[in-house]
Length: 176
Length: 290
Ligand code: SF4
Image (cartoon, rainbow over all chains, first blue to last red; front, side):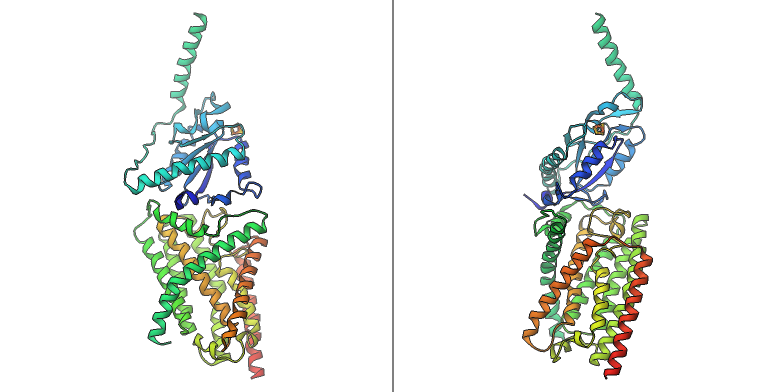
């Protein structure tokens, strides 16, 4: 294992979480779970971080913030979606302003489901993320790492139209 | 200090200080974890951190920040080399201050609000400990009639016996210099704080690695200052010196874990009070006892 995988520094961003998952992320940092065993430190600074933990779904306002933080992190970096809200939008998915999971705004490497996501699941996800981090380090060193292109259009209107089409076809199917 | 001893000291300090400093940083993190009832990271964690930072993609805010940090590192190594070659203590102090100034300029050059606030706090830290450092040099001169640190190896009793209060003052500012709570205002090694990462906010990758390595050099240099008070002209002196330095380091880790960060006003006030009381009393005592 290279040094990169032994010293993952994390940054946590609360997109629009109900705070359930945030509390679980912070619980990971308590002495009970002691993530510093794996060299994990919560830096709170994107420029120092290797792993981006995001809780909550993306909406029109925080999508650009998420992209900002993501692009401030130097490669190699890994994004982990913590909780179903971050994975797919969860119970907020149908909201008028919600775009869905955070993968609507930035590329996600590991999905950690759960409502709220358990600290064990988060630690597992980070450990899985270390493998991805290691791969990215190797491709960065060989110059084959491609910069992810971030979607520039972040509006919930598209999702509503898409959702309505799905609903309409489902309705049509039921009625026959 | 001869030219040859300087070269020896430069090579010795340049190579050994980061090794010992890195181990000390590892012990610090391990101890901290144990004090909090955790297992803690591996002993070599600081080394993994720095190696990781070196291979990270370089993302610089401007082209000169890395240069300033590099100058700061070089000057810290030079200061250490002067000190361990038995050179002039005042020279060590001034070179070290210059190193800190470069570090502050590096943070200011980014124009980031967090880094600027961190830099301002670093200046407050310099204002807090610098009078003490200057008075240590003066007390050193009063006691030994020279500024050369090398003479401590020809003493017949350790300096701490004639400068006990100055030693207490040194311990006080050591907390600031080693960036330990309650005086880790400009940036701390612990999880994030109100200023993001303070003075290092805009530093990433290799630049941040240089800051970490500089911290290892500085730790060894400051523990060397502690050792200055504990040795005398005999090989046997190394044993109490090493025990004393370890005890001081443990004390710093213990203080770090038991105090919350203070405001800069309190830091300034208390370090000046301690400086004035300890140093002036000690110097007056030296006069009386002749
Ligand atoms: S997954 Fe559940 S606990 Fe987590 S943010 Fe969403 S609703 Fe809250």
